[in-house]
Length: 248
Image (cartoon, rainbow, N blue to C red; front, side, top):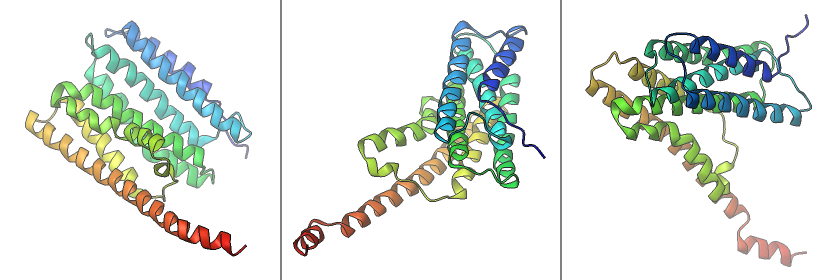
């Protein structure tokens, strides 16, 4: 059976159509919301297209199509959240979009395993979509629990920035299912806060718990990279290097 193939730019067009439909409703997006949503859709598609070209391809299969659908929904949510900074939006619509995006998070991996299309690009694409969705939700939820909740959304990007200064942090990490669990819990907590169905104190406690989980997950990864870096330093210590050079 012929495999279904998709191009990343399909979702830019799909996202634009969804944005047009929303703008035709009672809560149209602001110009800034439009700009933010389209910027996300275009930049994410450019990055995925570059990754595909490195693999010698221009299209991807069903698993990445699911991730791209999630990414398109995240782009729409971005437009809504940016619009909410200066105007009113439908919180129900935002939460509905986020819930669908979160629900699809467990689908892409399943499809990849069933179709034998698991890839490093797909895993990275999935992770970055998760990270940006958390950031978008944190921006929206900051009005309810305080600006400190942005620490959840910025955690991934702080880790990347630290890796620029400390290259050993960019080491490929071993697979841990716990990372997916933590990301899912954080997404659910932030979506619940956005829905405003909990008392204010419960929202703060839930957000703090999500932040602690994320700190534990990232802390474990940092400790692993530090240990691996120290091990490499011992394997190639100045003394061993001198002895090795002297034996030549």
